[in-house]
Length: 197
Image (cartoon, one colour):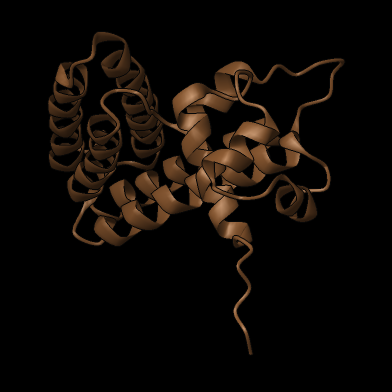
């Protein structure tokens, strides 16, 4: 069976997630997303007949699931290990892109407005990604001794703090915000596990 030279659907989605993480959603056309993924525009429309919104939604889901897989793998060693994996992932993305890339889930969240009472699918996917990260962290915190309410709140604080720190790192062109947030979050995790509320 001959291999097709057409790019895979996953490669287009991964390329779109990367492009959105660099330029945001509003500043990116479907043509640019296809070009960034080294895919013909026709292939892109073949896989995503609904256009940019469908591709953006898939890109957000892809990014959300990729982060969840990495964090889930490390959480067996404990919440602090999961936090370190979460931080290392974003540190790598920000540093390797020379502060040009951040989180595509966050990019869609801050750019995609809900209009006329209708929430765009990409925004729903972003909320689901954040929820899944929070749930993973909260489950690990509870499993390692944190009180249930405290685990839920701390998980939300971790995700919000890391996402905000990523944006600050890009703006300041420095990893210092992430380093400071990491130190505080790790101390909070230790405290939650040592002294459950």
